[in-house]
Length: 540
Ligand SMILES: Cc1ncc(C[n+]2csc(CCOP(=O)(O)OP(=O)(O)O)c2C)c(N)n1
Ligand SMILES: [Mg+2]
Image (cartoon, rainbow, N blue to C red; front, side, top):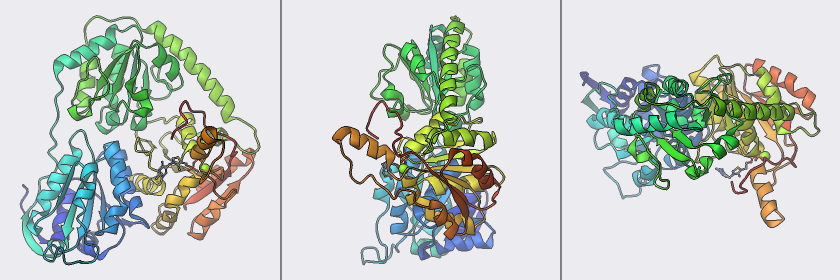
């Protein structure tokens, strides 16, 4: 503990939040949380406000994902908190250390029917690592410490606290928390050694690295392990860009032959979920390396599953000294498949079609994106194409919604990314359907001088639902949107700028204008509604 602090509940909260490295809040106003604003205002602590609470939580999540430290959303009691639940759930699936602080109707008259009176804790408990009501003003700093320690301890995730009105508005002295003291989980060294030996002696090993490798600060160790054991690396989620695209062990396109022919597949820092065929890599043996025992897959019999600090586990893999098999031939074969896949992609990305194919949008975007640009995907098919055609050059630059698959992250993630990186390109790739969830928050971006580029793949449909429904039933319902809608005019009305593009030759100049604009700028690209992303499964 670092001495005594005094003030109202908001002052006590702010002191604790700062001790944990939090440097801004995302919020939408409500009287229940005024003391937190008062503390921030007096301390010149940045307050970013939004037009829907989901954007506040998504913005906090973007900060947490990009900076690997807690992100904060402050939501008013009742509907403020319930509007934030999809954001909390996304953070739970993504292991993002988000803290949501909610207002709460007064405790002293609980049950009498106060405005916005509801017990939030049971609503959010299943999607948080820690959820509690703060019982007294002097307990605020210690409760924030507990919540943030839970959020930061692997397997990371969101935490929730609500503060009854009188707890937040009263003044007290309290002990200031010293800041994070996050326990480190040590994996079983025998299991780590077995994992290393399996990879080293396999004939055709593959690594798939995901978000927890980034979140656990283990990117360098991943690279060292892959290089030491000479294993090709594929990535997903925040793991994308872990190895730079030109690295001899970095692969993306050769996934099918790699997983089809591998004899050992090591999945590191990501669950064996639908994105990885539920971990079914028969006949390959599966090594599942996770950051906490809770993350071991219950539905897959792994050959070995070390659980603990990923940085230490991967450093130990890199130091493996036992017997090894030469993987050069395996790597060369995959490189040929990778190059062939890249050539196919390059052709698609250059397509001179009318109407525009989504692939071409990414072909043009790749020419203007800087290596440190942050790209954000919010949509259906249009974002599946982004995942396929954009190659993040650096880790921690690609934000997708993660396995919860929640549409509507776009403007919130953009706000968190812009606040994190005032000088980088921030580019949101949105389906026209997805745009409906958060486009009003362009107003928040304009008003708070947070320019970003939004590229809408406007096919006039909920494409990822319309095409599968037609394939299953021969017809579709509830899958159409207005064709050619001027989403750029919406942004212009909100104080930003933009334009509509109908010809592929006009894409490049439009994107150039967008990145130079200095205000939120929407490039509304009319894309081919007949184009469907090729999928092995038709269910989204
Ligand atoms: C909050 C939420 N509602 C509904 C869905 C189901 N869903 C997944 S993709 C999709 C279609 C997205 O359409 P659009 O953003 O226009 O992208 P497109 O597929 O047309 O490129 C829908 C409705 C979801 N994932 N999340
Ligand atoms: Mg669409």
